[in-house]
Length: 273
Length: 162
Image (cartoon, rainbow over the protein chains, first blue to last red):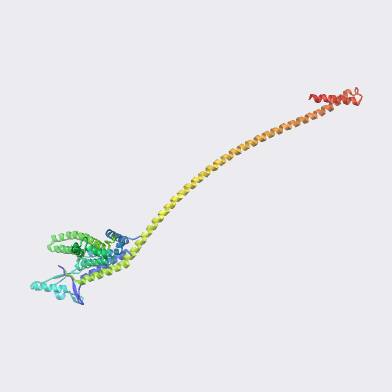
């Protein structure tokens, strides 16, 4: 499988593909948002403004379905940023990929720094099969959400945010929730609590990563001759379409769950006080 | 695929920056515009309902005014009818009075004319009969006393026959 281009910079292992894709995602999202609010108008909104307003209304609907509007209001921006960022991230990996192959550890370098992951893997392969020529492929262009680190970062950010809100703003109901309905359920509640961010992030990562893996696999079919080529093209058409669908659904699900988790720790229990 | 805390942190930083930028340069203005539109629509709705209420009040007022005008017109017609009746009666009365007066005057005139004529005739007759009698009796009556007695006797007779 493809390796990540990791270089060492001041003692840190920097994944260049993640850096690149994060920057690209952020720029794309920001450009879309700026285009939408370029000519803001109260009475005569343009197409892009209408689109973004529709998105805002959509996210508002999600928020309203999980918690009180007054409580959900501060998180609309967060949810909007999440849904746009994740959607764009999911889509970025679909149209094409940039992959470089390396045979020689000495050539695997960028900006004068060795790509650590490549050199290590090459060494390992050499040790395992000294007689064969080793090849390592590095993926530069991919969905940032197809990286477990990025997906988990977003999920854990939401986890920390929701629990901080619960602890500081909704203390009584938050701690009561752990022994609900009986103290006997404490371990189950704890497991539930800590499994949430894991499933939250891994669901996103798994869906997008699997999609990209399958695209790579379908592309490999071209090596089977003309029939493989035809099948590969047909398969790509179907799978790309499905990936767009999956990417959209995952962006929606992630945002929905974000609002749901926040509401569960922050907004629940206030009404009964 | 391996876990790197560096990627983790970078994602958080990138997302944080994106959130900040979007909030400041995109969502903030957008939300304010949406809020403004909401207010605008609210205003227009309340304005529309106020205008409708006004219109209803106006129509009611107009109806009442129309009713009033109709009533007044009816009254005026009624009044004028009554005045015209009264006037007609008055005129008729006056005409009658005048006719009666004229008739009375005429009757009186006729009476006085007749009296006058009778008077004249009487004096005329007196003198004429005196002249006739004097012509006839010029020679028969010698004294004045006897003449006068005779004339008076005749005159009395004429007046008594009247």
